[in-house]
Image (cartoon, rainbow, N blue to C red; front, side, top):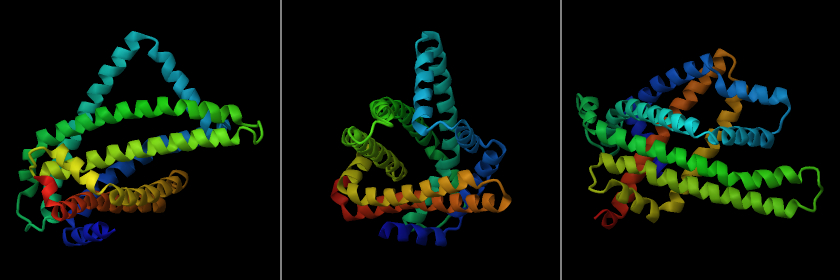
Length: 282
């Protein structure tokens, strides 16, 4: 947890970090209010009376029905790639300068005029990384959905059949949950630490991020779990209670602070673990 303290210290010294996320989250919060997708889905699910298992299974069946048409699959794949590329370009333009400035702050380099402009030199690299991570993330999401089907089917089939099937259901559900948890955790740690490695001009940034993650995996996991718990609890709260201006302001403030601390932690932890294990970066 020391790295979280270091991250907060960096943010207090460089207000730009929180200002950047405050502006970005203000846009997202307003967009979410105008197009309340998650709240609408939550309300529709409540009105329909269907349980989460039925909703997920219905969605999987709907997607599978469309996948039987090769033309639909090709069109969907092209559209998805174009959407992912657009997101990668836009996010690359936004975060290349921010990451450059953040990396300088974490490494205790004096702030200079025009840091954001200098950070544009990483635009191509960050955009390519974003696209790769979005594409692989989509593939992993598909794998997660497919891998979850057996557990969902067994859980749904066991409903109302007493305690005889409970041990088997618990075993399958827990095993599926553990596998998915560690799969996602490995993906997030290796990919998130790829960014500070790239910003520090490592020759093989992904290899360096992998080494850092391997050497400090459980420490990073414990911090990521704390972030995840805080985020999940906040989203459950806000998705039900984001219909007035006070809660919208609270959501905006929370999101700004959360992402500022999260991103700064990743860069601060990378620096700390690199200093502690310099031989791993050779």
